[in-house]
Length: 365
Image 1: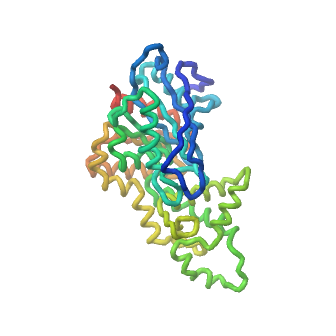
Image 2: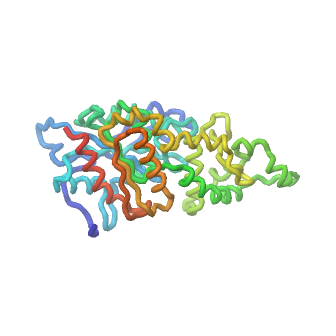
């Protein structure tokens, strides 16, 4: 694709503000009042217009949020600019785009309900969707409502499809988190190394005693996670290793929340030996779309569109997860599209040129 400086096709971004009820009392005191953008296509503001539009929700990846998707980009397009071009070219018809803000102090979200993060699944499907339908001229039914995202946003789109079938008619997952054994396990030793810098200093305790500590065998924090979270939260520029550690802890808070545990969640690895804790990892695997999708096959068959893709050089190995997920969906007789392309996990917004027209064709009036 040729480099673009900026699209000039019409449409406008409206900013809305919503105060959530379900996010009140969330464990990190993240804000309940969120301001986020909604893109309105050309023609929406014509005097006297009563036309209603399909609405697509864009879910950001980890360390991203809704507002970031409308930002100017060098030699590229924002998501609204890209969609405006696709509409102008005739590749798809006009839609409304909503970009909810689900950022957290742990760096992001998987768009699920978690006692360790907050009820972001309900926030999206039970609060934001009705709010957008009441505020803008949407076609307010699942048959004209889609959700798309990349990485964690792709995971969130899949989760929403499986758990809130009355809300969504179509789903697009670009490099969505799947195949956890390959996607997550390999990075945890790096996270353990980062956390080791915050190991509590207990002089009288030997390494053997620490290794045998019952808390560590149960995936509980011995203080290092708490200290790390406090330290990284006060930094202006955390390192790459620290941000990946924060992300892995965010995943633990998503997949294995426990309100009785330190920080509200358990860890899938022994903090000293690096051993995988099978009971804890089973909680993660239950959330893996590869394993979860067959349990929700009847729900997924109701979708009018299910589009998956991933670059075959994805640095998080998510192309293997996408292949496993596609195979699981095929065995469960769930119609879907699965594509691969020559790319990594980065710079893949160009794939929206393929997926969003496909989504529109399924959900158009």
